[in-house]
Length: 222
Image 1: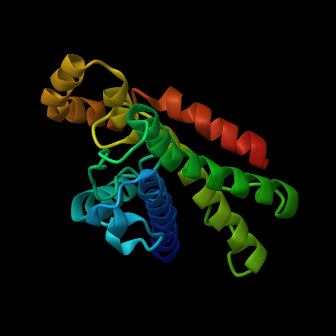
Image 2: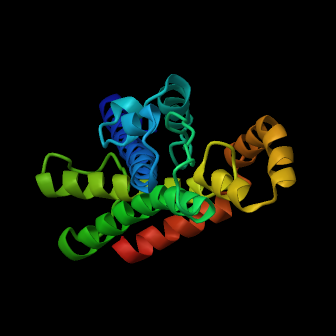
């Protein structure tokens, strides 16, 4: 982080804003699509909103993200409040579950695309945080905000596609394997989560995430 405390705090809050928007849109997208497919359970209805408050949980949405920001991770790491989809009234359960979870990730990528195109055609391209930036001008502030929000949605969309418990990729995997395989995976979910977090934190998937970051900067213009 920068040696300028005020700048560092502003960037940390901006990164967290981008993260909060990303996980809210992701989870809301899943809940809204599940509701459209026939899940009218209380929890799904409660989370089918773009209001971030219902999606917040202490560890995944507050503690872990701020730890990753303070540790200067390349992106904010975390997750929204978890919930189970009620598939009893789905007409095509297997297909519907795939569509539901892909819709959450799809919203992240859609937000990123909107930010990329806005940056490229209206704001002169994306920028990264730097103490030299003059954030007193509305255009430069908007440029930095859209860059942060767009990049965060791109990277978190990629993260949510990974087959890690609690993420869309995991639910899609469980939905498309045999019952016995799904049961064995569920039994090892805690170990898979721990190993997955270690792999991400220690940078073993940096190439994977870098590909999405490169795509963002290439399209948005930097």
